[in-house]
Image 1 (spheres, helix red, strand yellow):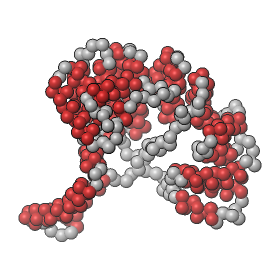
Image 2 (tube, rainbow, N blue to C red; image 1 turned 30 degrees about the vertical axis):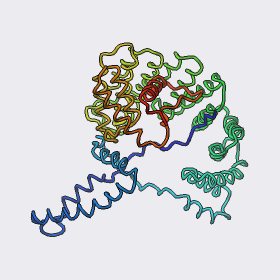
Image 3 (cartoon, rainbow, N blue to C red; image 1 turned 120 degrees about the horizontal axis):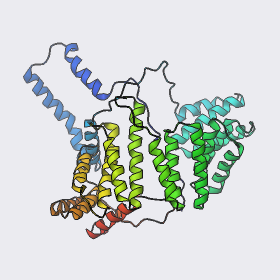
Image 4 (cartoon, rainbow, N blue to C red; image 1 turned 90 degrees about the vertical axis):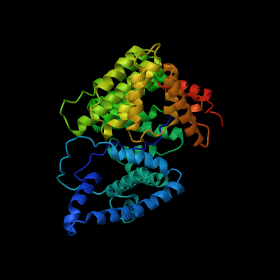
Length: 448
């Protein structure tokens, strides 16, 4: 089966500027408006006015709740999200100059319409920009058209000119025939022999893409080892792209039956993310702390897959100890990741002493998070697993009710019920998924 990655839904973190948040703007308006509009309202005027306002405001919401089946789900996610504390970080520095506005695909098209008489270098820049914008907007046909036109110009440039590589990368990210894609990626590698500087990152990217093909494990490992080496020479140890490639390499090493080397890569990821100094309120420190906890969770699942339950429990305990006292927006998901791993490190172990405490903490974190504790089939299956391990009939009855409630809302057989498809991709959470599937099958929630 193809292992070519899908396009990520997210493009990465954006550092906020100095703009006020919604909460700050609301507080300022609430404070200043009475002074700007004249006398403050009397008590009875406020009550009548607010009642009328609430009726007008809530009427569309009530209609949407009935008319839109997904509205309840969206509300259950958005409302709790507004209650999660904001990150406690230092304000971003004031930019010295206003950032250039990002051009839309239509803006690029308009510029290209006037570009026929421009020199080749200027037209190439426009075509590359238009191709990137169209690709980001998921308009593959327009992106391919622009990148092919860009290559028609760029192919005449000197071999190591990075504008050639820009065009080749754009084409390689879009072409459908696997053989053509591989040829383009190999062309990038061949043109940038003995890469230096930014060239290292370009070759690393090409080797990472090549590693997704139908390859022997040893060939995949070699490609990813090269990519890690190149990124390590061009980027700091905590660079997110380098950390991601190390995780890919760890999975490839596992697939090549070298778990010791895989563990080394997972451990290196953690060691690359030094704990921020106490009192460091920079956003970079926040991101590093979050990434470190996620890396520790990855190692814990690896250890569980190898039945090293005591090591997994210790790793998860270290991750949990790294969480801040107050969970803010950026910490909600890492906390849940760590607590989920803590629960399963107890569930999969031969004996458990901490399961109830771990489960209570995990269940509470979900209720306080973005979803407001809305039941999901996976979480309720976990509840049933925990109930069986604890021999707690009350928790089991709650799990069964919630699983039936969630299942009744689904129109097709849950994906959790399906046996894993054959894949060369290593999944260290397979033991968890196998237990979940058995629980759902035994409870009748896998029936059509």
